[in-house]
Amino acid sequence: MLCTLQLHAQLHVSSKKSPGSFAIFSPADAPTILYDVADDSLVRIASHLFQQDVQNVSGKILPVANSLGLSKNIILIGSLQKSRFIQQLVAEKKLSVTPIRNKWEGYKIQVVKAPFKGVAQALVIVGSDRRGAAFGTFELSQLIGVSPWYWWADVPVKKSSQLYVQPGSVLVDSPRVKYRGIFINDEAPALSNWSRSTFGGFNHKFYE
Image 1 (cartoon, rainbow, N blue to C red):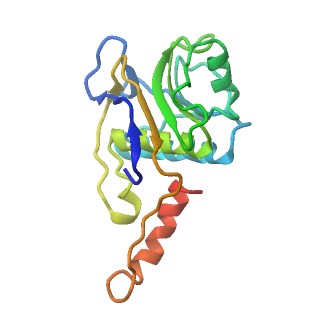
Image 2: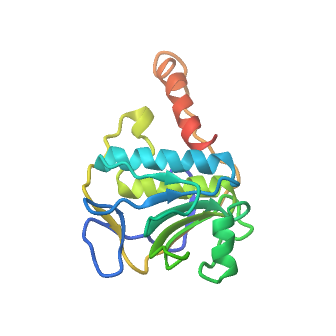
């Protein structure tokens, strides 16, 4: 991870399907990535970046939508503050956000059964704020095989044809420090050119 996090549980992602597991992607499954258009623009950006990450891992392009459609399974990304989908789940007591409420950039990832009418399962990534939702999304990207360093340090993506979140697993994280970053001495000749060009990509993905 790129920051110090307080880990409460572990999300189990596996290539093996089991009863009750959620298919992030498989040859037979392509859940819709869902976000609320009323949410912060960073949530929309994170949703499309996750779509790209899944494509890099599996070659499969998951649809991205901002309204409920015909998909039986969805990956819901949203902030507690602005996502009406998230707020509905909380109001209907289908999702508990107690561990991340009022946290700085906290997030929770878990599978919710029958979250909305016509939807069988949702893999929910809920952030206490907009950056929490983004960090939770990028954490899932890391779990499926996309290193945080893949863009600007050329870390290879781990290819998979199918990955599932195992039933009952939940991940809750929040940073122990409010502000953090990476500082590399870029004095010539070591990183003078490389660091300036590559940190732009890092900032775009993680801190926009």
